[in-house]
Image 1 (cartoon, rainbow, N blue to C red):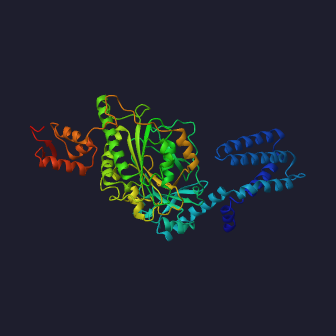
Image 2 (image 1 turned 60 degrees about the vertical axis):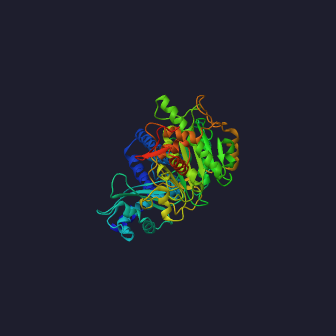
Length: 535
């Protein structure tokens, strides 16, 4: 008897239509003998209202429609059977026929089957976990969605979350699911808990068309939508006062991320975009009409960054005159974004200036977006550029260590894995607004869409410049700027001189050596000063 009862309990989900049919028959027979017509009608109305309230809690429209339809059919059969008797006339055959037809969608419902399977997995977890090296762990809760399920697992005492994260492949084998479908992340509340995400059908497998701008006005002050995550939500990134690093191998979809960013940013009238594309304009060329400037060779890249530093210095002086600490972008005072494709190919002079640009640009709304295949410290110029990138977007990489190069040391061991990605445009994002390794896929911006956006939103010819400031066509002479900084009472450091002249560290050191040999400057306490009585 125990085994029979266990069978009926274990398969209670599959046998639920049968249980409901038996309940309707027995309760109708009791109501037929004990209650009058008025009581049957009242109870029927109670059943209908309760069923409708339950249906409202369902998230999908088709599920709500099914629940209401089944409630009306069951209540209609029960009320008439309670009045005339469940064994009278066609009622038994009608219950079997209509009940079987109504049960088919229930039996075929994928999410119901998935929920049942998850419940059975949870019951078997203590035994299965031993095969994955997680003995003593238990599932505390699980939530089933359209693509899989998410479980919160408590580890045995003494086992850390990082140890469980490293066993994601063993957990996938234990559960018998497809490769790379299990993601394990730390629980932000407890070290001895982890979140296990099992994705059984890949929601990112289909291309993700760009949805357009919608009704919201484009602005750099708000996050820009660049794709969707595996749970169906929109992925956004804030660019204002943040530098962004985009990394991934050839064919991983860097251009897709870049196009998604530009598609959301170009229509904004409170930002000017400059581009550097050392492939001769192959990547950013289609956006040329919407870019304030586009450099396609080494010399052009150096000149662009030098002019960017000049603009940054102008903004700093203007902020000082205004008595303001931060630059709030408007149409008249726009933000500046420099987007560099293949950042590692920049010449050393441009990398030197980019270092200062990233360190000093946040306060005056100057942002650098760098896309590269492998952002090593050497490739980024042996300077602080990479450390200034507080937004990281990682696409597919070949080696595990490359994930740490993009997202930071220890990212791979913490569950940030991009070496398993196979789809172009699949990415992880790490910034102050995203701290969980949820796979996402970038929007696909078609070539025709790029052409249309670039034609509709041409860039202004130049940055707005105050009348009392030097314009780009009459730049400040770097030698004059160097000597002016050296004649200040407090002198100037090499970094100060680089900022003042918009020149590289190598140029500054060479100029200082020439002046020192001529006896015009001296170094004291790490700062350089003009020698007294020198013209």
